[in-house]
Structure formats: structure tokens, C-alpha cells
Image (cartoon, rainbow, N blue to C red; front, side, top):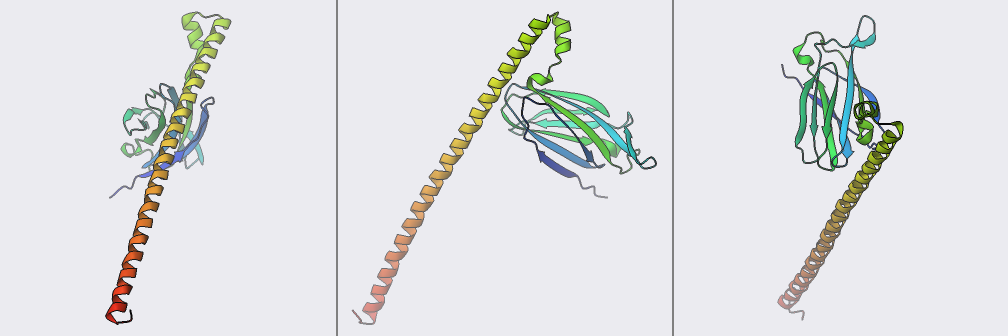
Length: 219
């Protein structure tokens, strides 16, 4: 029996100053991926929990411990920076080192467990980017910071994140400019080639007509 694995890719354009929270459904052999545009040197934290559909109660219930999720993250160069098996509820963390689109894929290990039995799994996913990934309550307790010191630290990290976003936007603008210039250059050369072809065809037609008229002794 051949199992067809489905892969759905969602392009999520998210503001880095906000955290994204959503839920989605996946089947037993289904894989879902999300694409996040992330600046370089930015920490990302993803929290998730799964629910399994109960046909008798006709509602989603917390998944058992045997059911887990496999998380894989690839950078813009298609290099795997995170590949790990987690439980039915967990948290994954990674730091971007290359600006651009990062692909975050999740799928269940349900093929190993009969308890799924082809049912639907609901996954609640919360992605936090940049300074929103920091737990400032833990930071304050660990470093023994006052409220003012903690606020200053938050502002410094927010400014640092804004600078990273601005650098990333400049990077995107530079790439777009290079693409536009390359496209314009190709269009120019293609126009020149077309003109040369038309001129060559015109000269060939004139010479052919001249030879025809000379053969018929019309000129």
C-alpha cells in the first residue's frame, strides 16, 4: 500500500513586533509547512499542543503521550537548522543566521501508533519572534533586575530588533533592485536581438526578391 504524503505550504506575512497564534488540522500522513520572513540573528520560539478528534464524543480532546510531532526548520538556503521529534505538546527554539524566508514544517508520528487510526489532529501553534520570544519575568528574577532596569532592557532589545528588521528590509530592497536591473538588462538585449533578426530578415527578403525579378528578367 502506497501512502501519499500531502504537503501544504502556507505563506504567512507576519509583523515581527507581534506574535502569531493559530491552529490547523492535519491528517495521519499530512505535513504542513509555514514560511516566515525573519531577519538574521533573530530568536524564534514555537509553542504547540495537539488535540485528537474523538468520534464518540465528536470533539477534540488532548492527545495522548504516545502521539508526537516532528518539527523541521530550513533556512533560505534550504539548509536544515532544526530537525527533532517532540511530544504531543512542546516547544521548539531556533535562531536565524541568514535573513529571508524560513520554512517551518510539522507532521505527526501517527503512522507508528494505531490510536490515530486515520483521524484528524488539531494543532495549536504559537510563534514568537524577536524580543517577544524572551520571558522577561524569568530574566528579571534571574538577574535580579528592578522594574526600571527591566524596562530599559526591554527597550534596548526592541530597538535592536527594529534595527534588524530595517537591515532586513534594506537587504530585500537590494535584492529586488538587483532583480529589476537584471530583468531590464535582459529585456534590452532581447529587444536588440529582435531588431537584428528583423533587419536580417528584411535584407534577406530584399535580396531574394531582387534575385527573383532578375531571374524573370523583370529588372
